Amino acid sequence: MSSSIYNKSNSPVVLEAAITPLRRGEPVQRMEKTIADARACLAAGAAIIHHHHDFRAPREEGVKQMVAIERAILETYPDALMYGDYLKGDELWEKNAHLRPMFDDGVLRMFAIDPGITQFDILDERGLPTNSNLNGLTYAQSFEMVQFAQKTDVPMSLGIYEPGQLRWVRAYAERNMFPAGTIIKLYFGGPYTMGLHKVKGVNFGMHPTKEALDIYLSMMEGIDLPWIVSCQAGVLLDTPVARYALERGGHLRVGIEDTAGGTEMTNVETVDAARALAAEVGRPVAEGRDAKNLLKAKQRSFADA
Image (cartoon, rainbow, N blue to C red; front, side, top):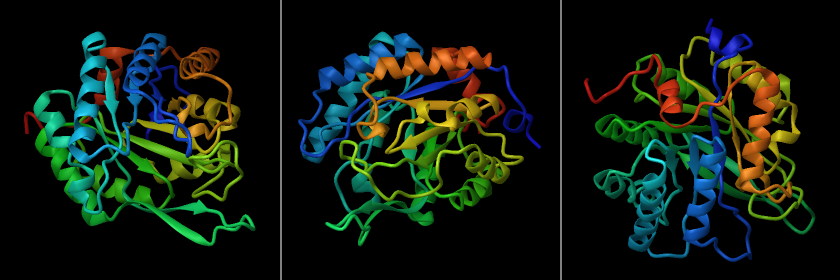
């Protein structure tokens, strides 16, 4: 049984800030705003930044935007961990066509995959989820992404929307197939609809409760990977999961992207609030290189394999 998962921990905590609002019908956030928010969140104590680009841009332009965003952030915070989203496309490597150029440019610090298919709500006029919005990768596609991570020795953020997806994580973790720094990202489903402003929805997965986190942790027993909690379409800091995750040795993802308009706080204010909560629990915040070293502890690097 892993003490880092099951016992209250006084070890440092890593904070992630998902900084780009995803609101249908609202203007796309400018690159300058994304960069400024990222820098401000890093200054406040975040170690990981998740950001988006202009989805409307052609693929080549989207790649240029992501390279420019991360290059600008690294100029000020060279130890920052960052990852963007997917590009437009139907095929796996159309959606991930940015990863190789970013690696070649020296700015790829982390990338995300969602192993397993998850359904998100699209509500009809009655408020019923009668349509399907599918997200994620098949396990075959996920394997290709692990191979890319191994070749480049770049860590991944593994998005877990449903408990069964942890079975996939366990299979790879038990064989030491993830690069050092890889983190498990446990998503809980909030009350709203992603992409809208405080509109009630019917989401995936489990509610953000202590009991739900215990289920996740029971499935992670013996897996020596760091883990972080998030509430999509809800406000993590308003749920019991935030404090409980800190008490159990986990890390926190905040920022305004996931909240679906459920908070009036800015990105920086959510980082400040998460840091204050960590202090109440007795856990200092790890920043920069300290955070990178913390996430990589006891994990395998493929650079020397």
